Structure formats: C-alpha cells, structure tokens
Image 1 (cartoon, rainbow, N blue to C red):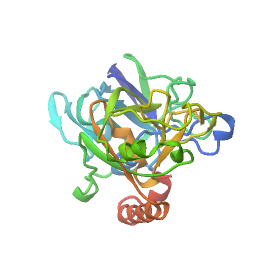
Image 2 (image 1 turned 45 degrees about the horizontal axis):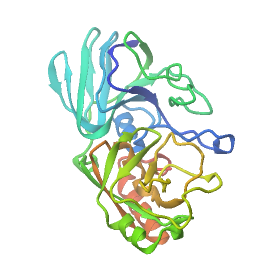
Image 3 (image 1 turned 180 degrees about the horizontal axis):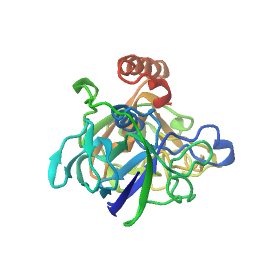
Image 4 (image 1 turned 120 degrees about the vertical axis):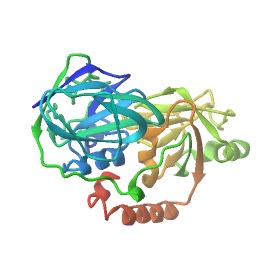
Length: 314
C-alpha cells in the first residue's frame, strides 16, 4: 500500500514523536511541531498518537493514493480537495486507489497534519521516525518530500468518526502563550522587562522549525548579549545582541549563547508550531506554580479524548 507525492507543497515532512533522552548527545527533541494536532489526526484513524504522519508547512502537498485507505487532517485551517471535491478536516475520509488529494494553503495556523490508517514506513533514528532536516536523518532519508516520492504504509482499521467540536483546536492570527521567567530574565533592565510582556509581538519571516524571530521594540540586557553556551529547550526565549527576542522551536539546538529571558509553559508549547510570519503574539508572565496548574487543567480537559495526553504534551 502506498501514496505517491505529485507536488510536495512548501515543506512537507514525516513527523512523529520527539526524541527523548538524547539532548546530552546534542540531538534536539524534534518531532511534530504541534504534537496535539498530530495526536488528533492519528486518533481519528485509529493509530497510536505518535505514528508517523505528514506535516505540511503553509502549503500542503498533492498526493495520489495507490491503494484504498482512510485518512484524516488536522491542524492549520486549509481547503483540501479529493478528486476536486472539497472535504473537511477533523474527520475520517475514505480514499480509493487512484484518488488524488490536494491540500491547499493554510489560511490560519502554519502546519497541517495528515495521518493515514495504519503506519507510514519511515526511518527510525534514536527512537523516533521524525525528520530532522538539519541533521538529515529520520522520516524519508532525512529530507522534505519531493515530487515522485512513494510513501508505503501498512493497513489500518480506523472508524468513521470526527473530532468533537470541543476538541478542535482554534486557529488564529493573534496568539497568547504563558511563559515563566528564566535564568537570565534578571539581565533585562526595567523598561525591557515591561516591553517583553506588554508588547504585541509580530512573528517575522524568519520562522521555521528551529525558531521564530519576534519583531517589535528592541530589548536591552545588562550584559553585551553574549554568554557562555548553556542549555536551551523548545520554548526558550533568547535575547540576541540585536534585541529582537528569538523563540526556540522543536528543532532548535540543545545549547545557546544568548541570555534566556523567558520559557514557554509546557501547557502552551504545542501552539508554537502554528505560529506563522505576520501573526501577533503576546507573552503572558506566570509564576511556576501557575504554569503547573495550567498544565494539570489542560491534561484533565483533554484526557477524555486523548488518553495519552501526558505523553503528547511532554
């Protein structure tokens, strides 16, 4: 059973769960930029939440199903057509052999996820089939999909169902994420501290799976903006020398040499995968105990639909 890529879209990769326990070797976690949307797509087609799926950034691919299968799409809002007929997201769709699926441009949000019932064959490295484009491993030969690629998959047994309305993630061009202060937050002067949390930041064109540069008033730190390299994580907000905050995403390196001025709370980290150039972002300062409380509330909410939510929001 297979799918042929006719047009690859802007950047379509195979993504799965993050790589856990490899940071001491310099290997970032990676995985789906929006793990919650990945899990929702796999849930619909009867897969384990972490089975490999397609992650399409801003513009989706056009594919031909060489075998009958069930599939589902979640994540960013986009118009998708099966044999020219528009189909919905957050529902299981049946495709026959020879059917063609065209996933258009994302209109809100940045990344679309498509899962098929069964398992897409992919290169598993360090416990995950996720594609790491910088290192060139995982997924399909460690690269983005290209026209002519054939993706093989095993048959699955998905049921015809839809994501309940209350579990469909809203997409927007204006976002807010909760953050806690970090190790070098104290290096910000008083006015910079105020601007960091009061500014409606704009996501710049420098936005990918490594991270996102935020545009707005420049920030100043009491140092020269440089420091010995230290550990960083997805969701770390750094302050480079130019004063423009840089928000690290899933494929960011494991160490960095700029002051770490905030850290996105675990409850909201999956939202970073849906930020796109031009979107607006507010950073909402919270105390650590408030961030923990928000996480527990989110876990309690999602557990009814996604029993593995603790692992999904790792």
